[in-house]
Structures are given as structure tokens and as C-alpha cells.
Image 1 (cartoon, rainbow, N blue to C red):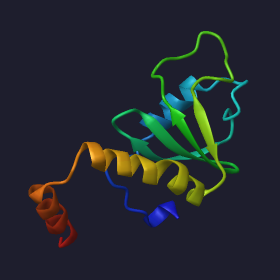
Image 2: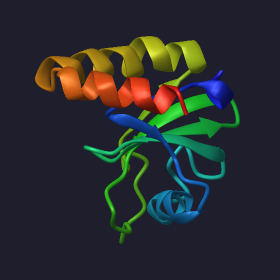
Image 3: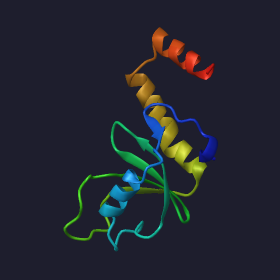
Amino acid sequence: MEEDFEFEEPWEPTPSSDFLREQLEAELTEPHPLFGNVVSTVAIRADCDDLLIKTTDGYALVHLTWCRRSRPSPDFPHTLFLKDWDDFLEQVYRPDLAAWLEENPTDEWDVLIKEASQHR
């Protein structure tokens, strides 16, 4: 499960502050299916503001817009509902990681830095 999962770039666990949760709640309005169903934030894809959240009945991937809606909309922010952790790994995380590594291949320094951080 996500509690002991080590995210790799471009994903990172969300900080313990409430900043991202407050932003998400500011963007959600009552007709949106996530309204009132957010349990916690789990991770963020920092290069595109996709936020993984735990919901009352699974997980959801939400693309933050960084604005408040003047009119309620069930379509915004864009949301992909995921039934469980494995669904997130298969549909989102692994494809994102593969695309990231293809566009940002690791080099010798990346390997050395990762090895050094694991020995701390």
C-alpha cells in the first residue's frame, strides 16, 4: 500500500502540510463527485500538478487547476477515479514512470546519488 511506497520522479509524496488539501477543497464544488469524499492527499506529480488522493471508496487522480470555480461544475477539476492502489500503479504510476525515464534517462550521477541516499 501507499504507506510504505517509495515514489520515484516525477511522483513524490505530498508534504504533511494542508496546503494541497486546502487547494483541492477550494476547487471542488458540490456537484463534483469528489465533493465531501476526500480522505487524504497521497502524492503529487510535480511536473503537471496531478494529485493522487485517497477517497472514501478508493483513489482518484485530480488535475489541480489552481483557481476557484465561479460556477459549480462536476467536470472540473478533471478527475480519474481508481478503484484501489493496484489500479493506480497499473493505470497511472508505471506508465508515468516509464515515460519520464524515456524523456529523462538516468546518467552515472543519478545512479551515484540514489545509491548514496540509500546508504544513509
